[in-house]
Image (tube, rainbow, N blue to C red):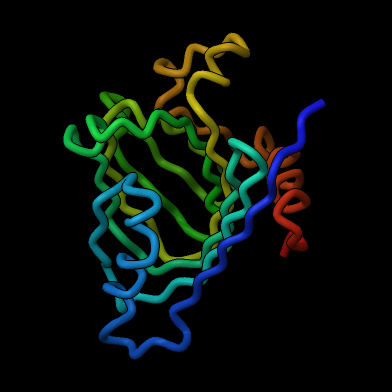
Length: 172
């Protein structure tokens, strides 16, 4: 049985001047995770924690409302992952490929990063995970067809609880 490294990366805009918070966050995260182009829809703030267990990353974030765009240029960049994100507080809505979706508090949305997407999210907390797309395919999932699929709060409750456990946070 192989050993997996555990890495934790925490970031907060609390100590950054309000007018500099968004740019500071971009400088911190986009060098690591060029997944989306973003546009804040309110004064920016963020607190986040990324826990990497081998090839799987678990993320907890409390972030301002934003527009998130994954266009063809970012898809072509080649980050080949699939993600599941649970919106804990607010609503998010968008288009994943050709699927319109709406995510209410407690619901999860599946995102295939080999495809385009656009969504607006309300400010607040979310938790999620990402893993290499090949692992999901090897497990028998048709990842492309799941892009933009929303799981209800009931369907995602056990997953949410498990992610909180893995990231080491109490479910608040």
